[in-house]
Amino acid sequence: MNTIYKTVINEIGDLAGDMIDGNLIILYKTNAPAELAEISVMHEAEFKKAEIEAGDILEIGNQQFEILAVGNVVNKNIENLGHCSLKFNGEKEVELPGDINLEQKEIPEIKIGLEIKIYKK
Image (cartoon, rainbow, N blue to C red; front, side, top):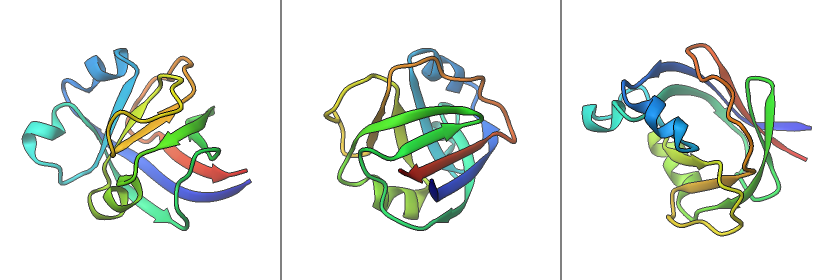
């Protein structure tokens, strides 16, 4: 598989665990505003080589999830703000334009230093 996106978690907001418990990870670059940082998982993207699309594979640690739907501003927001909402809900249509919907499986433990990658099949 061809890696199109790679990042490393470097900070976890105080309230991010509550979001994760609700099958949601909100990603932002490290410089997110304070009110967003407290609910977010912050990172510094290493690279993005192609557009993220339904059918791609998201990997967190060693756990893989199929991407089922991608909102129409996801790729722009990731490039500009490092932002998207990862929703592990099994839905094939996004609710919001910044959402990435994924398979509904258990999310691995989110910790500093963990890699997040996206692959083309």
